[in-house]
Image 1 (cartoon, helix red, strand yellow):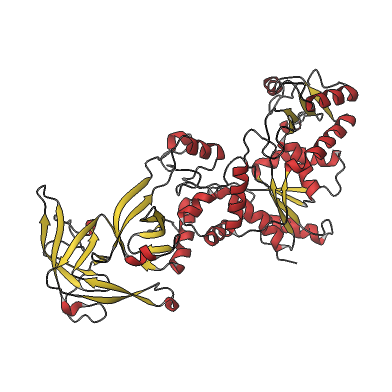
Image 2: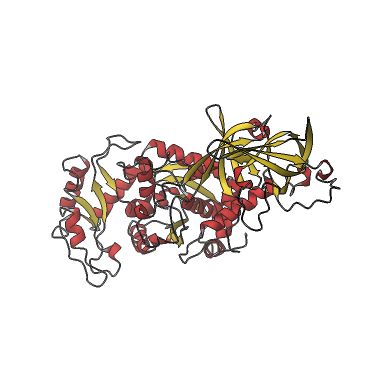
Length: 541
């Protein structure tokens, strides 16, 4: 048997050892009302991971009991995201597959005297539920006969009543210290077309009722939920025990993934998409799995992050810099190196003619990756920020009269800055030291600054996109998402890039020297370099 590493695995191992469970069956249960986000990656890691570790199975279960918010578009997106992360489900199951059986079980509860049709409005039900210290008030319709309840419930199903006019409630205990057991609503009237069943139904089960029924019908042994469902577990158990489920699935709760600087709410993510604050569900700034994939985050790095974050019972918050550090570590070991300059400044070497090739490691951390050739010539581009007319003290980049090394090439001395009529520097004129070639330097000149560059004669035009966090966090704690949004979080620069970047396949990740990790993509015919994660590691280990 597999060794248990966290509290859920310990419970599962004990259930197997005691013979309470013969084969582990879990399910990943998204509602198809939006795109999955990074928090769902942890739920996948738990549900698929537990099943895999103990040689069991995990279903993909769509909780599609709220037709007004659900779409086939979201179903398809969820399946793409799960496949991208590398998980494989045993069966694809929908709550709507079981609507007839769920309905039949509701009639059984009515016949058992455990459910009743209530005429109170949703507002009246909330007002009579009581508080954490005071019991609720019983509905005046609570003591209808089973025959009357059954007739009314069938009329609800037949479409006789309007939305909210009646509902079906479980009859449990209005004085229970757990508010969720105070005669909860288990069916509501909703005249809305369903993405799978169309207009066949006008009543739909509530999640807290459908959840245990669907788990049982799938043969789920361990229903793994996030902590907000802990208070709902007594209702989950009540449904299973009352209906005689044998074996009854076991619900276990774990802490959800909370992260700084990320909008972890489908409602707010949907609002950002609908009001045009982002380019769509797959905007690289979005914490959706589609957004992370579009940004260039490797699926393996995301799975590694979920594993490192661990599975715990207590709620906590993970700093976004830790996630970025994990992605950076993964890319650093694998991404080839290349050069691109944003806000390019032309550099002309006045005493150099012709061209030559210089060697660069593809990835210095992977000797097997070898080297590549980069053409060096008279006309180059460097970052405008690597030159200053009025440099501060201890400035080690280029200035008039100063020297710097062009990476893997030569030391150059800046002799003159060419300026336009407005005083803006348009070009710098340099001389190179022939004896200073990298690896063969006999010049005796020490250059503290090392600058990346591209060949002006062979480089490609590119757009370079950088991203800030979509959500301000440190200085805005406790405020609503709408007050913390950083909508000016996408920055686009015109850049010059090595030709190898223009030739690379779509989606290839590179480390742009001194800049960060970027994904190659295209906007029409134009090369685009989109930031995956910065080069600087802000995580405090």
